[in-house]
Figure (spheres, rainbow, N blue to C red):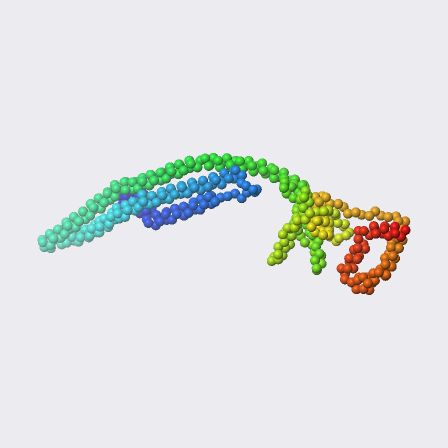
Length: 420
């Protein structure tokens, strides 16, 4: 075996073991599985986009990825065929050469070593024979030594011949499988190159789409920075076409059986149609969910600060809901924006009166109150809520509201005219 080339011997004895080829096969399958997963990812690739539809560049990129996925599949199929060819064209022939030729040579080596050991052992005993032995015994010993020498000589020739045969046959038994495998590898690579050539148009279009998206990103970033700057300066003035005139959170004062509470709504107001859409935000889990409420605005007026213990409030009246709806904005600036959008008005404050006018009004008021007392004593003594007749708080509050309502001054003026 010393005659064999060291590199070939190592290759044949180590690299072509069954475990080596099995490991190569497992590694190839793992690589193929990874490539197929990557191909599936490219095949199903889709952009998340802002807007109604994808742009042409986004469509081109997705289509190019799909073509690239198909290219990977075809290349991987060719590669797997090349791997199978490697097993049939390279691994198996070399393993057969190792088992048959190298294995047979090792057996010849063992026979050579065994015959040589037996011959030299017999030769040592033969040299120690005494010359006094009979001539027939000496002749028989000489014949046995000659026979063992002949066997050892034949075994040596067979071993040397086998080494020479392996040394010569390896030049084609090794080169031929390697050449066949290289031929299969080069064919696979050439097919890969041809498939890649078919992909070149998609590659060029993909590069163009990439450049377009990069340019679009640069221009869009400038617009976004400008819009962000404008939004910081006046956030409510930067409205997109088709969007509400103003929108945001408002709190609504609502009266319940247990008292007054403030409910959070997300409100959207369209100035052209005077439509206010209110969506409740504080809905309890498990309760019946309330949908958006559309109201048509009639008027809007700022709430007097001293008339309510909440800040940033304003009142509205709608066609769909009776009475006044009190809303609370998030800040003074936010209330001003809502009132501007709703054409809101400031509350009416009465101008101060002179001392003479105050005395005249007091006199008129005294006469009016005296007349009211007379009417109540004669006609309204049985009305619930007055004097000692028990009445509910609701009826009392209703009478007080009617008495101190917005028409009180007009009523005083009318009484003054009647008394005069």
